[in-house]
Every structure is written in structure tokens, then in C-alpha cells.
Length: 228
Image 1 (cartoon, rainbow, N blue to C red):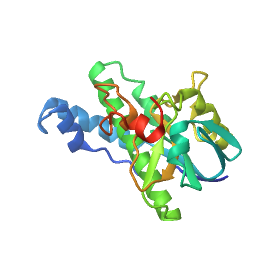
Image 2 (image 1 turned 60 degrees about the horizontal axis):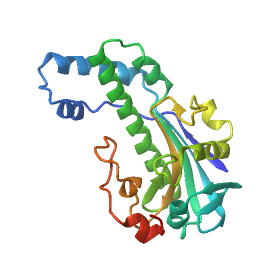
Image 3 (image 1 turned 90 degrees about the horizontal axis):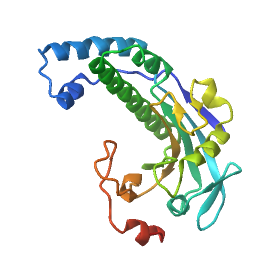
Image 4 (image 1 turned 60 degrees about the vertical axis):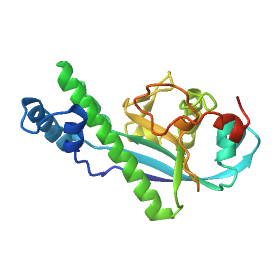
């Protein structure tokens, strides 16, 4: 599989976004703390992305084979029914921001550092999307992530990392025995062309999820994917 590494991703903190989400006045002492930490995060931050261009080799009702690796998921099989080319990926805020965040003992500073790590991850996701579009022109992309649905559980993460070999670890991303990743603000998955936007959140009934990107659609799992 051909791989692309993005390690020179610009990172500029969204100060207005932080002020708004925290309901801070720009002149407040807390806002000045935000600016101090943001300047440090921008100087240290090295968000990164790794992705590959892969092809579907076989598919069944509830599985697909990509680059010789069989993934078990009914939702994935349906979502990729019309796809031939996909983009496995790993994106991360980077080791530098995680190590920096761990130096804080003050709860407020630690919270703000984590928020800036989240912005670093967002920068990596945006860079991935831009680069895929510029290089391959696949059209609108949707993404699936191991562990986001019971249909594609977290242990499938091991299969995804098998596709990348040692490339992810060489960039500083490690798959733990728990199947979580380090740095902790790291996301992996498979991006695929899709005329209709897909979000795992559409199939997840969990309430009050801070990471929700789309409303839960009652009955969609059974109607589209034939599962209860």
C-alpha cells in the first residue's frame, strides 16, 4: 500500500473558539492564561497524519478484505458496497503536545492544555482531508473508526495497524495492548468516498456524548444495515 506521511502540519490555536466555549472575556485573567498556553502549544505542537491508498479485494455481507486484511463489520460492508478505493488513516495531536500537557498539575491548566491538544488533533484531521482531496480527488469522504460502534469493535484496531506495518510507530503513534492508542488524542480509521455523509454517531444512541458529530437516527441501523 502506498503511504503518505504528513508531519509538517501548521498548528494555530483557535483562541476565539476557546474563549467562546469557556465563556471568557478576552480581558479576563483566565483568557490571558489561555493565550499563554496557546503560544506554548503552537511553538511545541507537531500534529501528524499517516494515510494510505488501499483497494477492496473481496467483500461479503458483513466483511471486507482490504490489503489482505479481513475486517468484520456489516456497517462497513454496506458503506463500501460501491467503493473500490479507500484511505486507511491515523491522525494525532502528536507526542510533543501530549508530553507538554502531562507537565501541568493545576486542574485548570491541564484542562486548557487538553483542549489545545484537541485543536492539534483537529488540525491533523483537516490536513488529512485536504491532502487526500488534492492528491486523489475522491469527492466527499466519510470515515469509520474502530470502536465507534459495536458493529466494528475496538480490537479491529489491530488489523488496521497491520496494514500500516511499522509506519505509525515510526511517527510516534503506538497501539497499546488495550487497543487504545498513544498519544491519547489519536484517531484511526478508514476514509471512503460517499455521496451521502456517514457519521457513526447516526447509529449510536448514547446520550450526552461530548464528541457527538451528528444526531442519532432511530431505526437507521435496521433500515439500512439490516441489524437491530
